[in-house]
View (tube, rainbow, N blue to C red):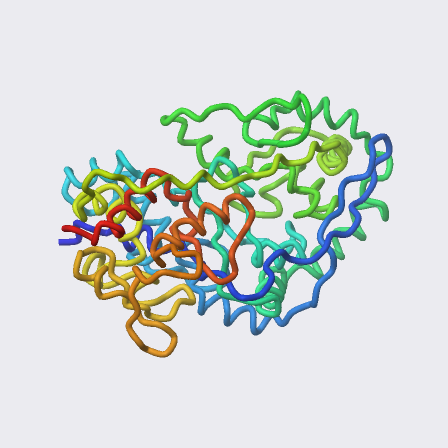
Length: 431
């Protein structure tokens, strides 16, 4: 009976997600964005990078198994048992074949990976150089999604290749459309002031956050039963990033008719004229944005003096998230997860966090030798704890190239949970 599909559902939190590299993953330096007629110029966007090889990019997309979460990769769809998002959607819709009690329990806790952006028509929407920079240094683009894109196990050249592949179909369609429909200066004559008024009048803030832009309508809360709007709001990007992600002409075309560019997109077509779409685009790409407040990782808590057992750590930490990528091969349909049996660009590491014995057995290093997850690094933290702390640092914008933050692409484990793990290790890991 397939009553425990959680790994097949969530193993691809690392969808295409591998991990960090020793490369500096901050991405390229910015370049200037366009100017609208009645607003100051937008901040710098992403600078040009190597063109990349689409053929190599296609192979990488296949190797990283990006289609286990993302549609629109150009690859054949992942099998239903291996498609994490489809699996979650089936559970939420009651289509998954499992006992009613299990379905009820899963739905009560089903938060992650119900919605993931499709990569279809990426070339007509996104700057190639922005994709490359984002792959090297992922950040939270969609504030209503819990999951984020993890750092991939790739370097700058590979990121360029993937970006080239994802934007491979952009050239002819975009050039022809611009010749027919667009002025040489895409926002010439557009009014950012009118665009701001239209932004409010058209209800853009119902779905989109626009962090740093003063006085715009905030994203409305999503009710559980609003199925039609839930996906649209969850996938709506923070418009702060739009000036870096999109060319101004592409942004105006997207605002005017999203489905004409990306069929099936949850973004609705809001009635407006081409001139109004250009005004909104002018506002989005030129609005003055306040600087982001510096982020900081939570304070590390002292070791607990009370007794901590494996049963408690397993219930509060390992069972909640870790098992989804580090488990026994039979935990979910024969897949031990990218942290155990490999996948998503990972080598098999043989790390099984589903049992006490599995954790004690450690992982396999690059030389094929078994290593302990409790061995201490230069800072004195056990390797297991260091990975949890690294995810907190990643969320604060301070990725450590030598340590892959865990859990991949999901919110960091809280200080109390890390305190629990660290205390358990310090006490000799009692069962």
